[in-house]
Length: 372
Image 1: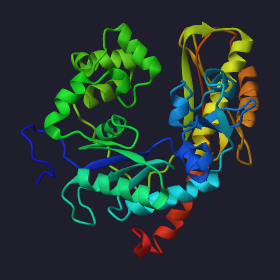
Image 2 (image 1 turned 90 degrees about the horizontal axis):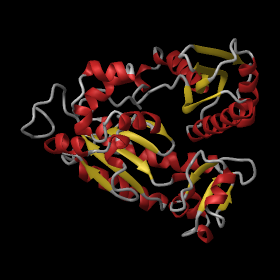
Image 3 (image 1 turned 180 degrees about the vertical axis):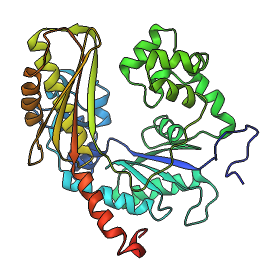
């Protein structure tokens, strides 16, 4: 029996999925721990030659965003207060939050320290309403940490993720099966999870502004225009997303890349982009408490030819400066001096893989502990 009652027929089993996303997590922790910072625009990160790891909502009103160079953030908000990150503290609070999740279900898939998917189709408390579970979880998080969270609830991970952004901060949104079709048809394409700025602008140029415009395109058209992502767009605009919540998801690589509106050839421009990508990659890795040993530079030229080159260390990379220095060395190994339309950096050989190896070794002799 389906967990939802509705008139629509879905070609996949319906689940009750919640996406919980903490509100400005790092910045909110700093404001909670230091009451003098509350109500003020703050940025977590280094003030000089650094990058913003997180911005409070007060700072966001001025256009300050994560992964933004600190210098740019200060220009946008001259009275911005920079606070150094305290990752041990963030991890400590994240652990408390996950313990709350596990009071309701063991099907918890963390995406980072501050967000996770929960499958509550069958839950430990026998609560029928996923909306009610989300309310309880958000209230418990506030009671135990003093922090607010937002939540999205629907039949799959894609819809829950999209929904969690709608009533931020400190709110939640349920997309019921009967409302999915109308909701997605009116949703701006830039709000679709998985559609970045570059893809959104390409869609705009093709006359695709909302879900109803995207829905008119065939899977063949979308695949031709967007590659393998075309099939994903074709499905999600119809509410189809069959990925299950995976409690033991192992991340094998972390990547950032940029496609440029104007092809780059100037060496200084390339260095600036590599430095920006290095800072963004470092910020993502810190957020997820991930380290890695192998850095790969990806270059796509104006003629769409592709070049990649990697460098692997014995120890883990630990700073954006290391990524930048290594990426410049990899850039110097490029075979062509041609205009560049895309640059990307990715890190692999992660510490998450070591954790996986440990769990595999323990799996057979200690099977009774697997689900604890």
